[in-house]
Amino acid sequence: DSGVTQTPKHLITATGQRVTLRCSPRSGDLSVYWYQQSLDQGLQFLIQYYNGEERAKGNILERFSAQQFPDLHSELNLSSLELGDSALYFCASSSQAGGPGANVLTFGAGSRLTVL
Amino acid sequence: DAKTTQPPSMDCAEGRAANLPCNHSTISGNEYVYWYRQIHSQGPQYIIHGLKNNETNEMASLIITEDRKSSTLILPHATLRDTAVYYCIVRVESAGGTSYGKLTFGQGTILTVHP
Image 1: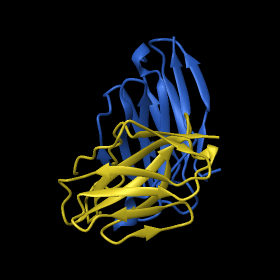
Image 2: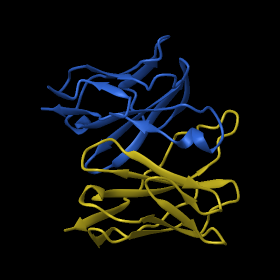
Image 3: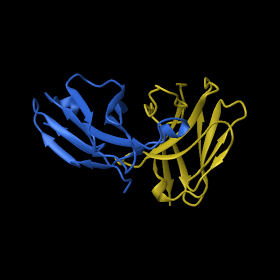
Image 4: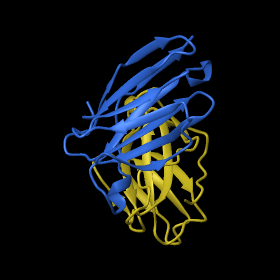
């Protein structure tokens, strides 16, 4: 158990639907990151939050959005789902805001999304 | 971030040392080398990082050449549970406003440990 909790572990839904993935970072970690891993794209950075504020964006689609709440948990919302959105979605957290340790991430077990 | 090059796959016998190379010839002075691994469909796991000195922790050792253009991750006594994809990532040290944690995972090296 890495200390980063993601729910649900598995999710099957239909095209056009909307889902929400949830992440609780390790206790005390202020930064939360979302990554997507699909078979053809590999691990890709989506978005980062630090203490409730968006800090960086990757190639996140406009149909996707995220937020980090005051209790530091984060949610990734995926809407108008397409077949190509089927992937593993990982959340990660880090404890440091600067220095080389800021790139030391602890990942959760992931949420596997299947869009039919 | 500097580009990294890793062999697509490697094999290792259980109990032997696994030496995973990474080339990062365009690395700049303020870029660190990070290693992560991902066991099948699990979340990536941080292993070790370094700047220019050799580093060792409970999981592995990291050897960085003097010119910093390449590095080697060493798993001293590989076990079957070390079978995974190993990613070498070069990333600048975070500074104020820098998007730290935005790691670029390449294809990595698939390490297979055999009994």
